[in-house]
Image (cartoon, rainbow, N blue to C red; front, side, top):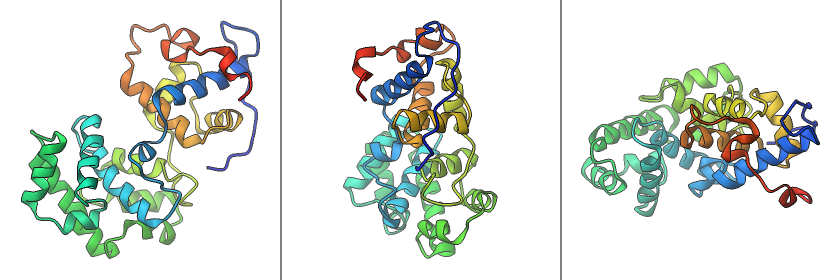
Length: 248
């Protein structure tokens, strides 16, 4: 995502020297340690072409399932290795084969319901958009209309729509959704900006893609218990070697 290189505002920290530099280092450390965009972790390059966006639509459908996120990520790999890379590929397979693939991925308890969800979404995309969800980004420019349209897909609740669109920031004009609530919570925990503008400015100053910083903070919220952590620079996930970032 292209963001103007605006310097983040100074804030008060336990370490009063170079507070902006400390924020930048914490942001970079979180992404380095926990990872960035989920699409990249899955081997999907949304910025490349429409086919990759269709691949991300299948992944987002899995990530929106009530099962554990780790299972969704593993299952995506199982499906990809079997040649099921998009929702159109889902539609081309029979239910029994999909159930077996989801069992292999770890959906032992939720395989039947998840397969039904995948098939329903695949049928809807085939009927409404000729099997290519990526065409929506060219046809719908308004964020509200885009969210409503995606939310009308079977099983695509607001969380799934948000997951899908956040990583399309800067790719689709209409992909303008609020900051991931998990990212906002984690940002406040480690004393970083918790709004889109402030976090975008920080990402630019840290030479990070905003989407990677947002996802890295969401990952922090998923893996870290905040209740018994002092937060700020004292959070174990906010620790960094100052010398490591001197020349970034």
